[in-house]
Image 1: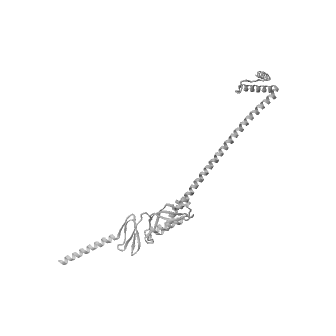
Image 2: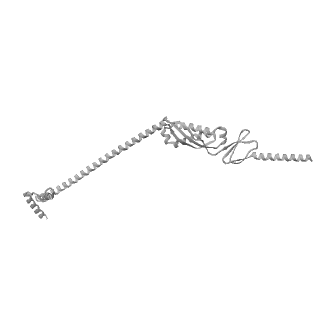
Length: 295
């Protein structure tokens, strides 16, 4: 009886152990990978496969998940490095880089410290590219410089299974001496522009005054021309009248002029007494006669 109980107990223990082994084997053969990760699997110490997100099966006890790699985008800590421009200006450049791991097997087996390697690569590229540019070009072509740095970093880290998603130049600082020199240059340029603007204003004022004088001279000349044309026309009329009517027309015109002159003297405010020569009366008489006769 005791032997039977021992036999049954032994069988139960064996079954329990077998079930445990089976369950353990199942757990060892099934790997569920989260969406944000990839698993690097080794077999006998060598790379065997890379498990993507979801349900995966491996050979129990032979395949071992050696590395769990996040494939989320990462940001390196902001880094600051010195750089010297082509025109020998010392700059302090602050950069930031974003990247993500696309091929974990390369990242795991080809580089020990990915963050440190990328940071060193970025620093070297920034110094090299800024060394090819003058200070003004660095300030005005920052977007172009960022694209160039990103392109070169991508080429450098491609063998590490890393994709650089974004590279930024956060700030470019100058040393105190350079800032002071640039401020003095800026103030001098502002003063020069103010002087140029004032000189151009004075020049414009002189030009406008000259244009006004020229316009007045032209108008005066035009008035004299019109007056001369009128006098010439009157002379022409008188000459034509003399030619057509003889001496009588000339005497008529002279008599009219004398009457107009006496009339103007009479209307003058400078004197209330008019002295008329004796022959003026005859001129009046002749003028009236002629006017009456022409009427």
